[in-house]
View 1 (cartoon, rainbow, N blue to C red):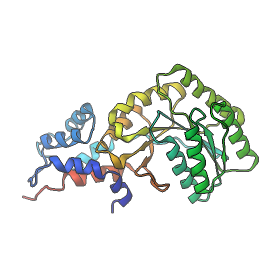
View 2: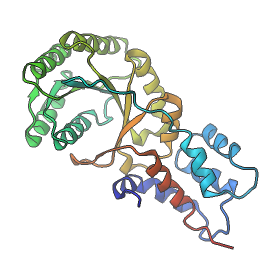
View 3: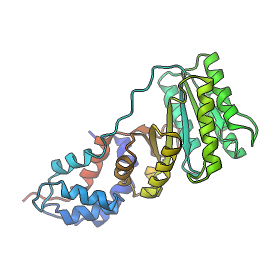
Length: 295
């Protein structure tokens, strides 16, 4: 049975596909398939690849399409070190949903029995500090913060140092939203990474890039630049419940060659779920073949 939560997250993508499908069709052919994949924001070159690697007959079999689609999600997360505290550094552009994602990830750790602390290293905006403080209070999770415009690297250092001293399991550090092509902010991000390692050797253990799902494939170039700057370990894609562009995940996975760790499907603290490629593909396939009739 499909995970209901995953299905909920791709409702708008499924609805966009349904709108262009024939009401009744004996068999899904490659022309119909091309249209529905493009409609869901699967990149054009990937659509052409998918069709190329299908068997030569005009009609498309569900099992064949699933086999080809799964080949785009071959990138797995590297084995994370069994090191405590484990440090996640959250990175992304303005408006991608980083701070809310930090809270959701913290809630997930807490629900699994972990002792978590947050670091508010987005010192550029006072509102970001206040937002994370509100989440910390709501979730009853400790937080290290400072005043606006103070050194974000110092906050990261203090957070990790506190976690080491008090035997926390997980540290999650928020960072300021920054455009990928701003040199000064890129250098600041590199500094935060260096200072994390000074606070605890080997940290941050995981650098997570948060991408806005409503941007579709336009977020890929941003992600490539961040990866070149600090080396990204995993992706979280937010706001998928609010966009018909779920097919962009094919492009994200193929172009970045990075695992998609989680997807955000709402604004509540529980609306962050591990990404399961099989369930995502099954949602798309069940939608594509929904009106197919037996001969």
